[in-house]
Every structure is written in C-alpha cells, then in structure tokens.
Length: 352
Image (cartoon, rainbow, N blue to C red; front, side, top):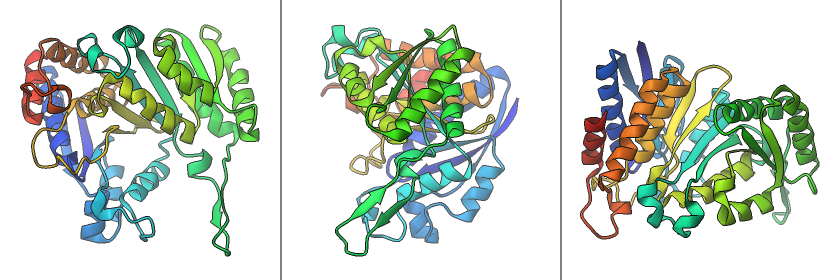
C-alpha cells in the first residue's frame, strides 16, 4: 500500500517523539511491503515565529494532499500570552474545523507491567481499557462567545444540533460493537438544554445498535466513577469540553501522559494522529521524552485511516512486550536506568 502523510512536528518535544514514531512506522512498512512518504509542515509556535500564523496556508496545502496528519505537540511558555493575536492552540482548533475532525478517540489502557505507576491502587486500575470518544468541533469551544463592553461580563454558548450529536454517537456505538459492547453517554441533561438534546439523540440512535448496552452518566458522576471504578467503563462518548476534561482525568490512570495516543477523525478515512501530551519544553532536546503515545498514535493511523489492523496490532503488541521486558523511559523509570526516546523506538522495532 502507498500512503502519504503530513508531518507536523510542532514545538518542544514534538520533533523528537514524531521522529521516533516515524522510525517505527517505517519499520512496519518495510516488514509488510508498504510505501509510506512524508512531507513536513509548520504548526503552532514555530509556525507563528516563521510565518506569523499558527496554521499557515502552506500547511493546509500539505495536509490536503496527504492521507493523514502526524502531529507532535504545540505551545510553550514563549507563546503563552492570552491577549496575543494568534496562539499555538488556535492552529489546532483551525485545523480541526478546516478538516471536519469531529470525533476524537482517546484510548486509556493500564498495562499490567505499569500498574504500580498509577496514582490509584493497582487493584482499582486492574483491567482498565477505556475508549473515550470526544465530540471535537461543537459545544462551548466553538459556540458563540462575547466579552461585553463593560469588561465585567462575558459568555460562551454550548450549542449542538441533532446531526452533530448523531454523527459522533455513531462513531461511539460502532466502536463499542468492536469492543465489549457497552457505551456510556456522558451529559448534564439535568441542567442544560443542549445536553437534553444530546441524551434524546443518543437514545434514539440506540435502536440501530441493539447489541450495545447503553447507559447515561452525568458528567460529575462520571468524573467520580473514573476514579472509584474505572474498569467498569468500555466506551464513553461526551461533548467537547466534558470529553476534554474527562479524557485528561482518565489519562493519569495509565501512570504517565506520555503513554497515551489519540486520533481525530473526519467523516471519511482522513484523520489527525497525535499523543495527548503537551510540548514539555523543560525536557525538549534532551532525548528523554516518552514516545509511546506517538508510537501508539501511528498504530491508530494504520487502523483507522489505512484499515491495516494486523499492522496496528503488531505495534501495540510490541509496545506492551517492551514494557514487559522492563524497558522504561525517564518518566516511568522512578529514578532507575531508562531508555532514551530513540532507544525505546528501536526496542519496539525489534519486537515487531
């Protein structure tokens, strides 16, 4: 198979982890007879510095001519100015909107070899394997907003249409069908009108997925249950802001932000693949960043964009095998010996 990817390494540790992920991806390609090519482009802080735009037109062109986007991370203290005309994060929002990336998939898995690294007791996080599906282009983050002229009042609007809710719910239901057939829909239907529409839409769609067990969980209750009984969840679907907060909360279950991948999908096969962590400028250039989230994001790209399930599983199994062998990056080494970013990638390649 031939495929072309836009590589947006971004800021901080982004270039380091993307480089590691590409090495693993190329190794899989050579093993299975695929031909992958890449074109680099700018996004985030580095794009602002070089072009004055966090998501420049040239980057849009590169992405439009690619099968998927491989992203590192954006932002850092250098650009941390809330009043600035442009910020690195605006590039991400613009890209999601431009490409219609409405469904964000974040798997949260606790590996047995790392159970002791979770802030919760090992018996609480045993068998945790959750997929959070976050609606990505609606809700509070994209609704109407305004700061009043008096400077003392502002508002943001949580707005959804039934069609927007239905398309992300379809993604979640289908994901549940391929897993343990349980879907938890997260809302705040006891207070918010938009969330009552959310719940009624999900209930109506459930008729098409009768093999999936559906439950509804208020967002505050869900936040509590993610800590007290995380292994009871299979797939969660939530609106944009709720999904953002809950997925960050759930990410700590795995022991490190560096462990977790994500996929942002459009209506077709096009997608954006990135680790969930930030740019970590404090360790940038030291070669110690954890590349697992990026490597597993490459596996998600193989699965969702190219439909190469065997290759995706090969990467995921290799990562788990390396962790079982005791190989650790600095963030999960607890003061002991650790592998560099690139060394971990080489260890994964050796297991494929």
